[in-house]
Image 1: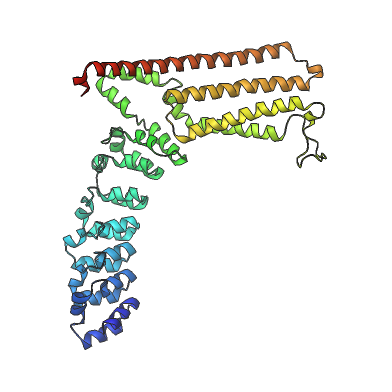
Image 2: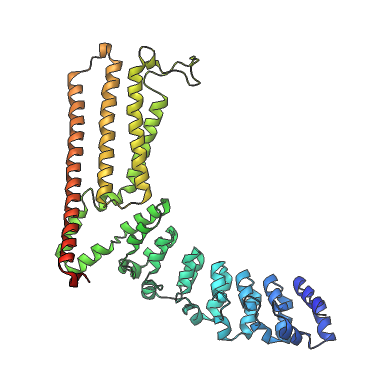
Length: 438
């Protein structure tokens, strides 16, 4: 008879259920005592058999708190599957503790509803148990943290109504991350935009977590992609700062104003703000050199039998000038791609070594652009004659590039020497003062 009951619960056959109850009034009592996995109510809640579930609850309300092998109640299953009517019936007979009950993984019915973005279930729980929805979960976080973790934006917006703006600004997880921190970490552009629209979030935008990071700082510790670049732009537009700048501002306002001035230099925040534009510029340069390599000056012989693309016209009198052009063009393309990779990798542009490499690569590109331009102009001119002013300007530009490269290298070497001397001094002081070192 038990097998017939469970088969009826799979199909939601109310007629068979009524017949079984008429034949044996204790059948539900035996099921709740003997069954160690799903009860018929679990199956009805999962399948969405409303009438079947109502009869079971009417005959034996205690089935609402029965547990399956995962320690889930029927309300867990109805919430996860989005069966609103069954969830409403279960809430009528379930106590507040039943709503708070966690399965073996510490998940409440609200957790499962948020994870699966069952908006109608969430609305029902908010209407019937608003205080429960605001309670902390077993991991010490709120349901809003769960929504961000699973990227459930609509559920997040719906549940945000339970908290006022001031409360939203101070909600933190165990690591001290605010909602803005988490949205940035999980690269949720919509959520970041939504949070920054709230005045209290903007007021507390520079809060640091337990590791001393602001929402802008945490982006540096995760892989860089276009979502991360978009979030970085949003945070910078909202004037979110790095933790070290926030601390300097709090300790000394005048010193902070000087830092802001220095950070406007090309090696400061300016580069971070312009990272996306720099990436686009490197793509354009690399694409242009790639195109120039396949379509060299003078074109190609399309009827050549030496290769499917045809020989370059420049190779006809002498292959030497064409070989030089290919080398110069390849250097420009490879250096552009190298800069693109460095920018896209997310390495902080305040890093002195990174700045030195980017500066040298950029100056090399500018140098070889001028060299290639001058050589190709000469090759296209009668008897390789080039206007004197053009030659002077090109050579002046190449010398300027070499001068700047030399200056940046000197600055970099000076920085390395200072770092080594400081490290050596600290080591000597530690050796001379073993007690302080301990």
